[in-house]
Length: 267
Image 1 (cartoon, one colour):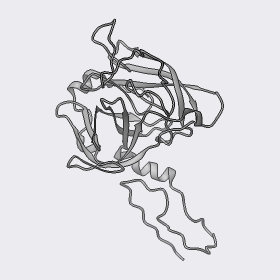
Image 2 (image 1 turned 90 degrees about the vertical axis):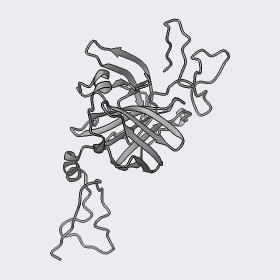
Image 3 (image 1 turned 45 degrees about the vertical axis):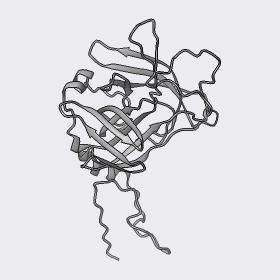
């Protein structure tokens, strides 16, 4: 993504790099030129996705009369083959006027850019805790179907970031603009509520970008969905009547942050 104050340009990215190549430069792959805002790239293991998205392209943007904008594109997958499917993500404007894409597919929400700019949609304390973070970095090896995968970070109530990254975070007062610093990089974005792809599970999510063009996504499952998710996804380590001949960690199963599990046994 590039932008301009005039229809005829110049079109620049966040680092004032031009959209026009004055000479041949490779614009994809491991050694690619890193210009333009990378609104999203190849990724996997995000939420409950069963296959990683790669080679997203042929994209269009719809600025709808309802005050919302949508990114429409098709994607291939990292399972091999040339089959592709269409995806639609809502777009938002951050405080600095850059487009950022929703972390999950559009599922009928009604949040507009005006809502973001004038309303506290999500109370800041609701995003604090353990979150999944996806960093859409440049220079992926597309030939090998390389993808980025999420890591865990913790957003403390005091505005600190720990875990895979360290830094600070905040939500501006009176609106839904979200700011986060990871290491030495500052990202500006928005805080919204969404539904996870393929599930009826609501999450609190953020999407943001840095001036260097890198975009990030993050989410935390909404509190009232934690128990249902645990019950439907936990792996029972033993079965009734099973003969045990080794040590088994009864807590070494899929756990959701915020859900307490206890074991009892008659034998």
